[in-house]
Length: 164
Image 1 (cartoon, helix red, strand yellow):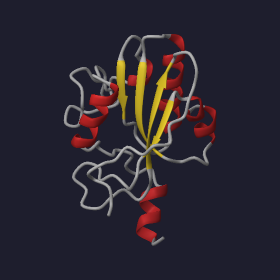
Image 2 (cartoon, helix red, strand yellow):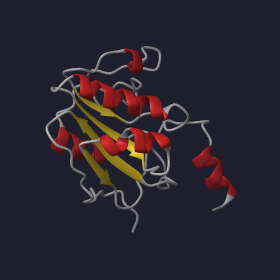
Image 3 (cartoon, helix red, strand yellow):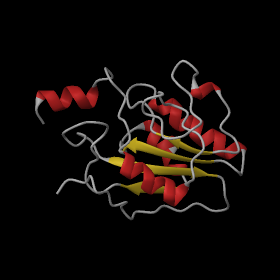
């Protein structure tokens, strides 16, 4: 791994990775319709209802919503994952779908992601925002929902953005 890739993967200079629109539309079709994006900007939101960084989506209730979350991927991503898990445990009507870096070696992955209703590992690497290159990390779609039973899905979500 070259130095540039290492700096991108392990820095928190920019945790903003805008969700590819076509990929979002597939998620919205499968898990939505989404009605809240709690960590967005007015330029990259995917939902009519959203919270900006200044509005602090972590401090707001998500209950009763179908929520799409592509959190900042730097330090603090664990807080978004914990919030998703806790919101769904408190309310049977809440579903939270997260687009996350697949960091299966982290404490938060084992504490929260492994309790998700579904985990979909994405085949290939996504191209976020206006990037010309694919992300230097694998991604996963994690679905938190409080229903009876838990199961893991290991079938990839095929993306038109995947690397050949």
